[in-house]
Image (cartoon, rainbow, N blue to C red; front, side, top):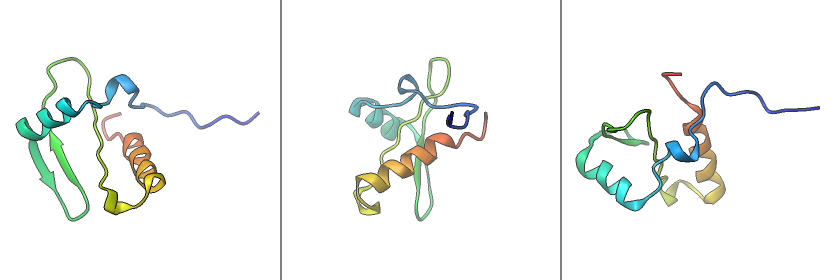
Length: 80
């Protein structure tokens, strides 16, 4: 029986920033690092662990394309 490959680490729903107020706090109080295709806003999280929030611009494609980008970014974990 086929099963998907095991991932070493995955950002679960609890690890993700989902609320608008949390995104705004990161943008206001964080540090910005950007390139031509990607902007990162980084802010220290006071609690344990890491949190990740992804907002993909609509100009990068439809919902399917944007969700694919988010899945790939969530899978990438340089620390794990």
